[in-house]
Length: 190
Image 1 (cartoon, rainbow, N blue to C red):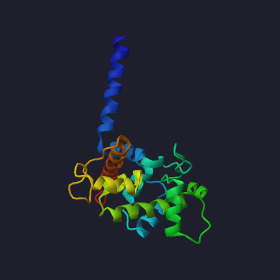
Image 2: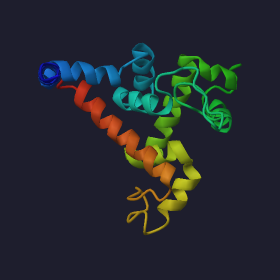
Image 3: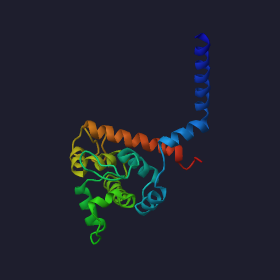
Image 4: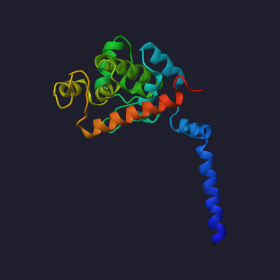
């Protein structure tokens, strides 16, 4: 028994030692923070002046890179857009095109519309990622209302607090994910 325990401890220490090696740890982290659909992400990030790493953060948070994802409120695709938002985006982006809500399951359509919406959120909220994320999640009307309340915004431009649990949790996930993507894939990385 003691021999087995010692062997298990030795194996544990070896695994722990390997995981502590920076290249191994980085490769493992990259497996959890992938850059799938990179050609499309790069294309639409460039088209809408977005950091691709931020786009990956939204995709990972919204759908876990599953193009067939559907939420409990029927948001669809990689960037999880509701039908109401899709119809609004289509009227601004592609009024003459025959794109339907079901087309959001196509990664190219989801990324095109999602990146455009993210671009508009960032533009509306002066590039503040947290406020834009709150708007992407909860809508402009909700964020605009909160911006008018001193307890949530000292300047009326950015949110300092996110009073709703789902909104708060979502913004934390986006900003934390973006920080990891930036650390793993930022310009100073391999």
